[in-house]
Amino acid sequence: MNPLKTAPEFGLIIVGDEILSGKRHDKHMSKVIELLSSRGLSLSHVDYVGDDPQCLTKTLQLAFATPGVVFSCGGIGATPDDHTRQSAAAALGVPAMQPQACEDAAQFLQRTMGIEVSRCPHCHLGQWRTVQLLPPLRAGSTPPTAACRGPP
Image (cartoon, one colour):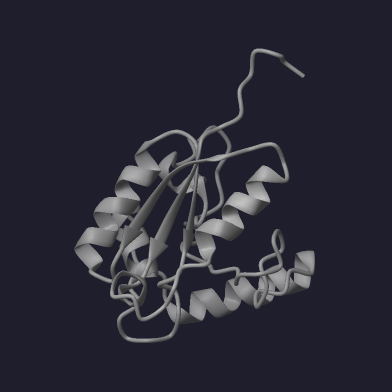
């Protein structure tokens, strides 16, 4: 291990009008801090953003453009005001995910890796959500850098 290598910065985006209005209390930040702290890591910044698609897209663009790891919580349900998937696609400059492609990806993850998409395979708390499917890389091609950041 390289002793000069430092841990990446970790950020958090918490999405939802219900958090900003006070209808629901945020429990995501304290849980992320707890999970990072247990690994000797810390949270460097947090952004709270409502369900406005333009504001969410701008927040995600900034997250994709900066180094480090940014987690996103909330705003990914089945209600009409949840725009995270579409905003993530817009922030990356890629087409929005089609529902059938999400279902196909979920079945593929279950079949090939045993990942149950109803639970995040890492923290077992949240849901694993497919944001964008990328075409396979061809020999000699350059991977798309923005889309390699993974789902928000």
